[in-house]
Length: 274
Ligand SMILES: N[C@@H](CCC[C@H](N)C(=O)O)C(=O)O
Image (cartoon, rainbow, N blue to C red; front, side):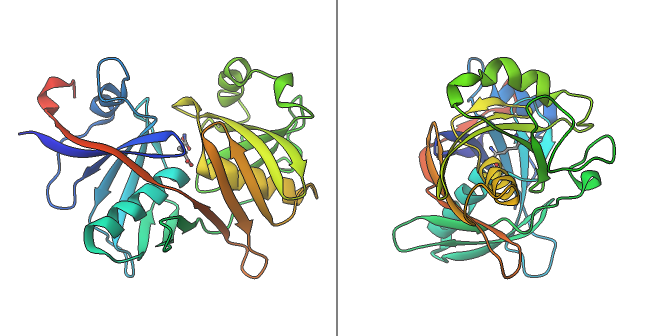
């Protein structure tokens, strides 16, 4: 049986979205990695599976998988895409996404921009998680990065100039540093002003992407903690910009940006290993 999918992206961070709310489709991590392959599969940074919600107040349960088949608790850009997909499906602009990182309320505005409440960041070393009890604002690594969990582990390096470092060289080494027992997403940020920063993210399990929503949230949280930017900051990535607000009243992080469907299609699962 052929499985329908939507190919979507948030600022060029691209996803295959499969709906399993009615029936399961045998999507093992091995099969997901094969489908994510850009040469032999459909190709994507992350693979997104929709399931029936099982928590009160939630509209859908969303699972995020990296291109290597590993699962992540959060994916900001994919969360916006799912909110957009639900809106286009039934016309409701507000939905609550159940994820492994908690319930994320999402809203699509009149212009089609999507805001997702990504919840509060986790700042304790054990929650990132890190391998040892250290100050998450100053990790004991060269370059003095800061760490935070946005439902997934992030470390942010603040650079004087983006050109000082090649994320493709430094990223994989840092992703696998023993300080990160579950690996980590590695952000390289350059603060441009109190209201703007540049960011490139080497993503755990997917490599360098054109944009990373949770990475943008993490970079703003870490920059605010260091006194470098205001609580609302524009994050400019290779694929485009997100607006991030770390709300003072309740500590939640709000992410606003576009979500786009590139095409829809179907695949034969039996053509891929399981
Ligand atoms: N692209 C994402 C993050 C995807 C998951 C990440 N690679 C991880 O393993 O935690 C985003 O937009 O947040």
